[in-house]
Image (cartoon, helix red, strand yellow):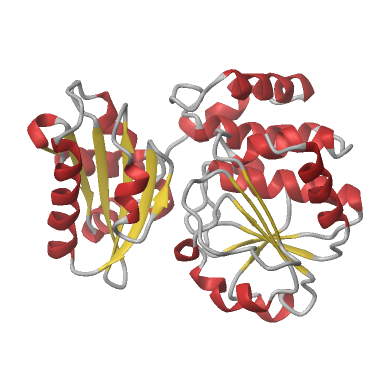
Length: 337
């Protein structure tokens, strides 16, 4: 957890903002969205009028409570109305330029920039004298950082804020199954529950209300399953035709990479997703020893030791075998499960 002086500086920095523009990465997950909502509602107590801004529509359907918690704005379609009044830029759950491409120009001309993140991968964002970076790689989620900061800043943790932060914390920890779940994580989760977050009520819309199109997409993905590196690497694939023929929205792919984690003997999983415009999206996971953030970094991405991603521009038939070969090489000298 950041020290007291840094926490106080963070409060002062935000209190000086009148109309901060809050942003997160492409394809926002529960931690990104929960952090946006939680921080936005919290800084309103400081007199700020934050604008929670996303890059893509539609809003991820698995998070209905977050969809209605704030008024969402969209970039670049609302750029002309959002940018003139923006006196500060707040970036949550990423410090990677590749995940912030739609606002690449804005990053250079924003009056001030704040980064709050827990990822190991970071670019030179928020490094000017007037900027601030609060980064804690030991935190299981960005929502954990915000949950710890609120009482230190003297701000009220309301039931709505608690629900938003719990969603982000729980989803980034696989509902407290992943290796990043520790005592610190569970203490924060307990505090959020005491304020009003209900784990069972929040779980259902995220994991138990999928449309049939998602199950059909999962079926297509599982049919693509390949094992490499002596069974230690599981490869999953989703092509554009899979989305077209199942009717599944691309926002439904969050967490699908974890499906292959149930396989005995598998250390690493890669999900390749064919995006429009000649882009292949990589989702990478590992169980015990492979540093997938380092692997993703070779392709312009990044993330955590056990969970990472990248967006690679290139032909599918070139990108897929190249990434598999790199993963096999990384696994070759690793421990045997």
